[in-house]
Length: 249
Image 1 (cartoon, rainbow, N blue to C red):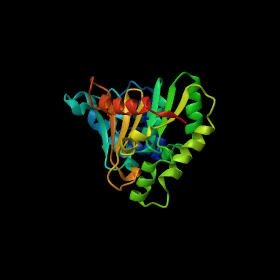
Image 2 (cartoon, rainbow, N blue to C red; image 1 turned 90 degrees about the vertical axis):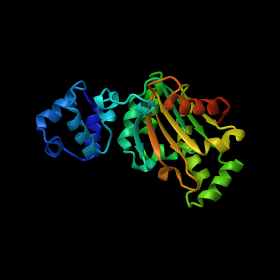
Image 3 (spheres, rainbow, N blue to C red; image 1 turned 135 degrees about the horizontal axis):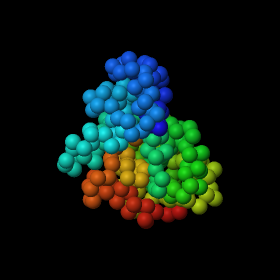
Image 4 (cartoon, one colour; image 1 turned 180 degrees about the horizontal axis):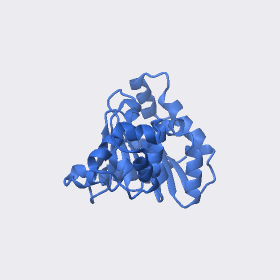
């Protein structure tokens, strides 16, 4: 079953009949796509479906020909978003659900994960118990870099408060061996606060933070590992380096 397609259709509040009408196919065709993950439409139709659902073709059909036509380093770029907030929640849900081995959430606050993914705690608990390693790297809410960032953003929703939202939710998951949390080292905080990396097995969502812009207004890349030392490896290696020097929460 193509759960990614079913979820994206539900998130877009489109029935199979409505999606079929908008993309020029029959309702039965849409339902066959959902029932059989290996059944893929022609490339042009797949693009129309993805556009109607507000996601990428890669998210709906990971082996789609659309990725295959890329030959250079950019083939690791599944999608690019001008703002993190413009990435559909279904993308995050699908990537988290699909991961089986390693989830690394290396945003400075990570708070939005809990507010935008209502079932996150239960999902993480279930995945951890099935053997998936889950890690959170956050900034120290008391650090000087956190205070400096709060001054730069000048927001009524301060960075330290957002970090504590994550810490509070992680406390509810305390005692599960596969779930770990660390503060970034003080010497790494200035680098961590400027780049968020979220790894889900061989895919990652990466957000470079721009000047005084808050995270949800910063651009984001969806990457999929294709080559050694490609874009995915570069960003994930950076996050792993910060994790390695992190301090247990």
